[in-house]
Amino acid sequence: MPGVTNLNPLQSLSNLLGKQWYRVKAALCIMLLMAAMPLCFIFTTCVWLFGRKSEQHDYLEASLRRTVLVSGLAHTKGLHIAKTLGKAGHRVILADLEEFGCSAAQWSCFISKFYTVPDFNSLDDSEAYIKGVINVAKTEKIDWYIPVSHTKAALPDSIIKQRLAEVNPQIICLTLDDPKVTAILNDKPLFLEECNKLNLKVPYFKKVHSLAEVREVAKKELLLNSKSHYFLKPLMPYSEDRLNFTPIPSDSTEFEKFLAHYESKLNCDNPHLVNQFIKGKEFAANAIVSKGSLQAFQVCPCSPVQIDYDVTKHSEIKKWVEEFCKTKKITGCICFDFLEENDSGEIYCIECNPRLHSCVVSYQMKPNLEAAIRGAMEDQFQLPTPSEPSASSKHVYWLYNEIAKLGLFQQGIGEFIHTLINGEDAVFDASDPWPFFMLNHYQIPVMLSRAFMSGKRWTIINYCLGKVRYLRD
Image 1 (cartoon, helix red, strand yellow):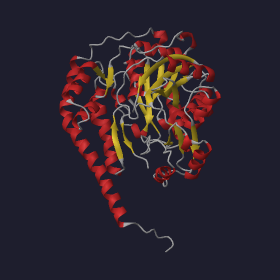
Image 2 (cartoon, rainbow, N blue to C red):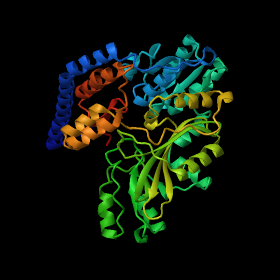
Image 3 (cartoon, rainbow, N blue to C red):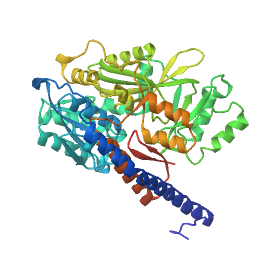
Image 4 (cartoon, rainbow, N blue to C red):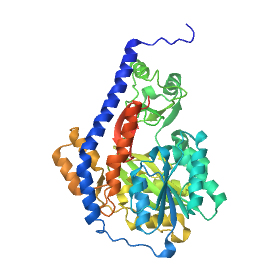
């Protein structure tokens, strides 16, 4: 009958039960956090009363202090940038999406004011967000704007830079100059194409919109007979297949069985990449850049779900990033993902994000990070060599994530104690303890409450990003 959809009763029941399970999971997590809250509150209060003066701050001379607007404060990296500047004596204003009005950063003693600006889902409906940030900038008479961008905000933040230049040419923004360049860097296939033009090494790739195109690529590029392995990579963020690196089979029968998994997933609305499979170690490279000159640079080992960080050195990756940023005359925060092939040791860049990487927490709010930011903002303070976190920097973790790993038997008690003794929590700060408490017992419970109300499918609580990660089909 026209206008009537026939639903499979078993499928409907399965969907209903699935939604209830995700609600139960959210409720259990909220109750566990509520149970731990009194102890954490007592601990935080004691630290605030007796430990907040334990750290001495070397403020810059008055002529070097600026009024700085920082956005993206739901993430720990945003809190780190804001506090790094606040500890140096800058006046720091925060602005974040209404969705993250519960951000723990607003309770930091190094923050002067906190604003919320309108939410948006795409560039097409971001105008209210753009105007909101500009209004805050005008109201507070800012000198610098540093967007610690959310995934969806990198392009609007480039537009804000252009608009602020019209409002007040004296305002300096740490973001890419041209929204078109931001769009290229934010698009995996376009970025990889740009790397090929620059003769910078990347794996083989081909964007496909259908199974027919996969078959054509396999035939044309002789993938089925090649010794190299290839896999299908979804371009949709947080897809359930984002961690599926199953190589495309060389046997024609197995090849068709492999494609059957993607029959309902790969289409024009959900394109994928046929990607060369590189077996090796994965690294993230993070940079703060001014006119192509690196002011801050770091490399860390990484994984698909990153929730702790270590500092490492890698000269080949640094050379690659320097070449790219210099050639493209990059200004702003930018990060890259690399693979180092096990057999050859060659490095391949696999992705770029035109925004700051969370591994910036490894700087642990030291003055050298403030100096790098100042060098990127004002030419007279540019550093001749980029600031890098010390190789002896402590392992950075999020305490409640480590406790969850212990409770889920993902690590033993010995490993847990070793992490606590030899590492450092990313948020806890004896001179400013309340963001630690508010992240774990306000911001995260608010995010879990929304998950409970919606019943949406979610996978993990990401303390690093300060939110619940949802699955996308």
